[in-house]
Length: 116
Image 1 (cartoon, one colour):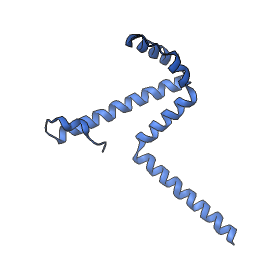
Image 2 (tube, one colour; image 1 turned 180 degrees about the vertical axis):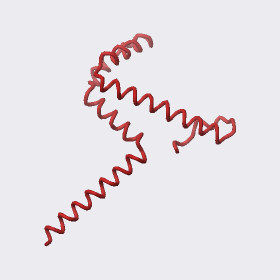
Image 3 (cartoon, rainbow, N blue to C red; image 1 turned 90 degrees about the vertical axis):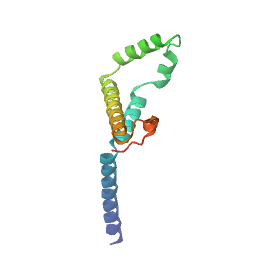
Image 4 (cartoon, one colour; image 1 turned 60 degrees about the vertical axis):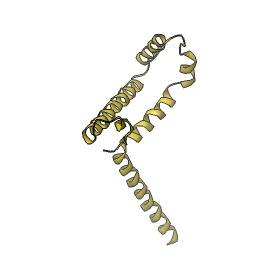
């Protein structure tokens, strides 16, 4: 009887944890997307080699290095970077619109909180 109770307790708690994780993902998708982007980048990209090979001459050569590196990387990383940049643009536009709408034309609109 005690073993059955422990198995039941383990299954119920597993469902509770899964429901909590699902609610957290639905409520804060940006954190999840950032986590997936960072973890996938560390798994698929050799960050050390990229940092060693970056040209340090000027900005244009560094920019060209990143363009060529992005063009020659796998499609998974390209999709993740594109999605990440789109999400940054959407979040920034929402934040800017909300702050311009809710405040006077002040200099404090830059220091706003991320609330939707």
